[in-house]
Length: 252
Ligand code: AMP
Image 1 (cartoon, rainbow, N blue to C red):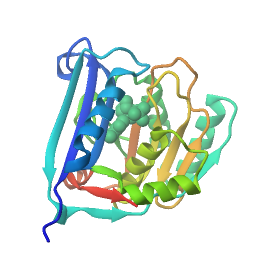
Image 2 (cartoon, rainbow, N blue to C red; image 1 turned 90 degrees about the vertical axis):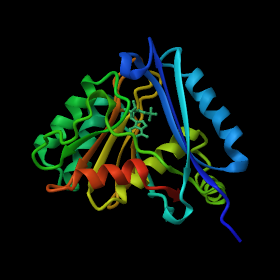
Image 3 (cartoon, rainbow, N blue to C red; image 1 turned 120 degrees about the horizontal axis):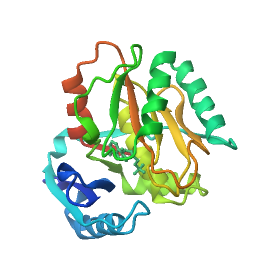
Image 4 (cartoon, rainbow, N blue to C red; image 1 turned 180 degrees about the vertical axis):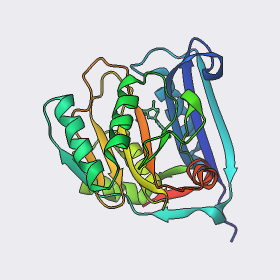
């Protein structure tokens, strides 16, 4: 029997015009969908674009592309741990401790933290060399948008039952992204906090330590946020970006 069709869905929303015309990034989202689910998932993405605390979008793009089933890989989700801290300063110190354990250099850690703290309009992730701390992508504010990953439905239900306190789709989406990123042999670690002014929790992700949530990485009301991928020295950047943007992955 032929495999059912699979589609990649990508949404991006901005205010003040499209991103490429200088608009402020409001929200983005990526899903993998069977043909039956497309309408539901597109409407969820539209809802996400139109109800974000960063502001009201006046530009929304949703792109749908067919994905070759033969290319899909299955990855098990990173295990989750939580570090409860009381201030962003404490949270950033905790993030630095974890990144150091993963052999990210002090310079790279500092550059990553400084870049995230000064960001306010990134659409995708920034790639930093984990030793020199230098930026190695040339994408500007656009960064690298990780796409073509989603939870396999039954596995998501199972995971949800095992983690009843994580009810928001935000964490599930972040774990799917962090799992895909961490499983590349080029990734050393990821550092993230959200650009949503209402949401102050972030994480350090890696294969070795899993998905380490840190309860405070910024103050409420701040627009800063984004993702830094610390990569190995000598990474083949083109094939790394190809994996992040194009390789379809089920989490489950
Ligand atoms: P969010 O986790 O949706 O609040 O996103 C926070 C920031 O992380 C965004 O502003 C982007 O800079 C970055 N980001 C979100 N989704 C992705 C993605 N799929 N790939 C790369 N970076 C992303």
